[in-house]
Length: 339
Image (tube, rainbow, N blue to C red; front, side):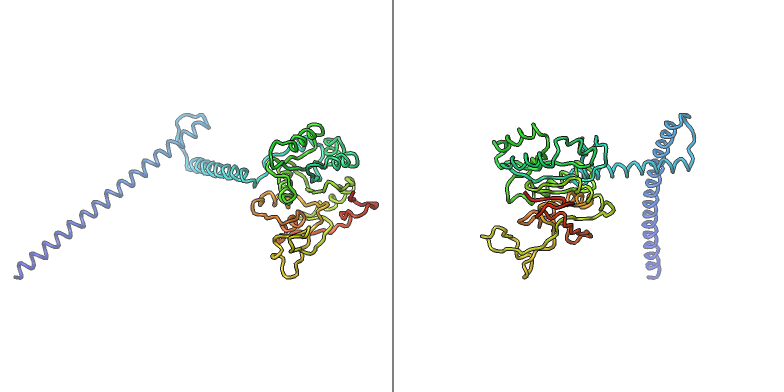
């Protein structure tokens, strides 16, 4: 019995030894395969590095130093990073996160642009536009940009029935005057005005590199020299919102002219937050870029001036209550006057 037990133990020991040997052999084989693969990969890398050095130095087949190896590897890594960045930038441009182009007008301008002024107009307001052209908007627009650093354009959308007589009239007028920004993707309608204002700011910041972007109604006369001087005084401030600041009652009755569908968002007091009057206001470049980047997320309210003010809530923005932007009367040094 003892002999048989001893034999069994020996037999089991032999079986365990064979298993151990097989495992060791398997691991050794895997190690050999791995090392061979690494050696082959290293060999390919070495050949590549030598070829790259040969191309750059023209010295023919030569030995490669550790320092040169590291340099080439670093170059390859930088190239990969640049490729990734280029892809990200292309995607950002497509999403509107980076200005897509600068206008030919701006690129030819002799003077750094102080402001781009958009005059918000609509169908049937040709008399207003003609009055502005005669009063304060010069016909020599390029000269205005070159000498004063100011771009001025009328801003209008498209008819809800594309290509109709309303669109054709604007196209004909623009062929004669060449002083419009026509927002092809924006429907021209009273209820669309807040979206139209946002679309103008997006268009302006993507086409002109200016210090400020201003919005004006087409029933306002502007003193361009006074406006330019006022804006220039604030060039040292990065995030400024300049206008005739106000607040006001939020109307919840649908029959009211100034009805606000989102009245419930403004609390029990039903009072709007501080914002600039829609007659004329200006924002700095950084704020215009912010609007362009976040256009898809910035909501609009019933009124364009309230909408603009809402976009800056929560941001580190300096609100400048400029009384000369209050257009109720024309006085010496004033910037604007209502017609």
